Image (tube, helix red, strand yellow):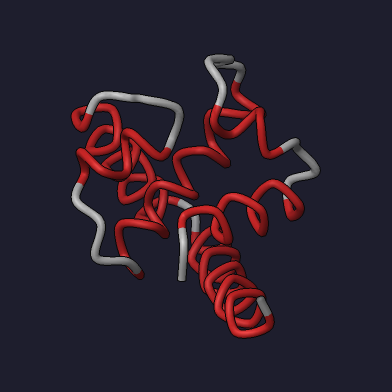
Length: 99
């Protein structure tokens, strides 16, 4: 599973561009999917937070840690998010096995 595959599946799911997820924009409709992508990348890859930060448009590793913490907090409050993340992980693994 590559970061590239994760970003493509998340961008497609949230109807954003690949560039939006890697870009500098910080609007809510982009930040939450970006944080979800970081969270999933952290869970299913071996990348360090520093490497993930670099892959996500040259962000600092603390930004990745913050994004993952935000999603962990949201998971406690929003039971639907867990299902969404699980379905995205499945989609990413399917996409990765095809490419």
